[in-house]
Image 1 (tube, rainbow, N blue to C red):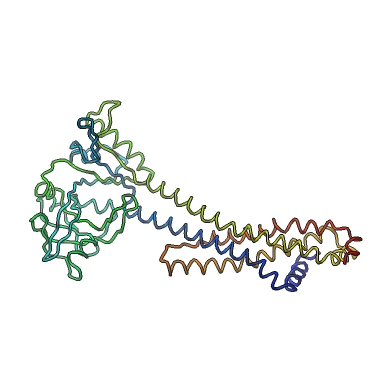
Image 2: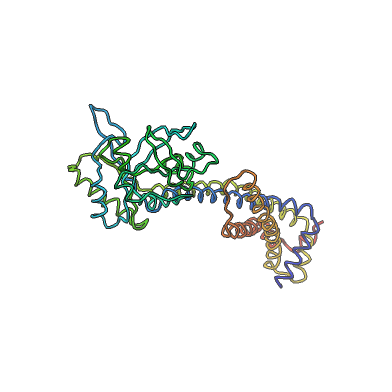
Length: 406
């Protein structure tokens, strides 16, 4: 039997009961639409998390001074004073997997401009820190290595600091006071938003030369942290091993002793966040797939009713030469057509719902072509799976008994 002829017969059979066919398709429409929308929400959340982690910088390792045991009490990170500038230069010199490194220390201070003031983090570092963090400037210019060498009173401010201190005023060239010391604002950092790794506002910061911080604000001679950029994401794990081995050797830490520093690889955080996002997406898709299951059961129910209603028709077809395969194919194609039409409408419903969610709730939503293809294939599979039993039942009817059926 010609497949196109079977499809035409299936369309006529479905058209005879428009209301019943429409209600049957409704389960598939909702199921496919829900799967596309939920997967879009999950993928959008995954992309947002990855973007936040990438905002921390590419291939970044965070080396920080570690804990120390004082009288049985283990202090938090930053308690040791063994991480020094020479450690950073040694990392650059002896760790081949490292591309860039920047020293850093920090403090918290009240910053004043005119009649406004704001408490924020003051980070001291060198110019290459901005390259490691992939942190461009919104306006102005970065301080140079010469400013570090001379301990100049220059500052780069984050967007949060700019809003709270300057408002609509252009901060470039203005003078702010940090712990009663005047600093010239030479640049404004581009907004980065909240850190996915640390959960902090990255824009609530002021960056000044490390020498200025140590000599004029804190008096420290050690480093709180060293920011390191590996040559690639894959090389970051090699760089981590090289840095740990080098610092243990430089700090004379014996085997079995705890490190007086720690190295955090942001690639690990990115991998964990990616795995969590994938689980979240699969969970949403699984919940939405329940609707498809219900829709498939509805198709099976309607096809069984159709077989019962058309028993005499089946007997006539068999009597004039239709085989079991022809009858089974006819009812199976009817189920698939019903499922595919519902799946097509469901795809449109899912895409429209995704854009509506994104525009109304401001959630990040990413609808991929792959999710649409999978939803279409899944809807066809639902039709085949749930239509097979009714089609098989129709094909196995006894022609004589079918002709007697009233």
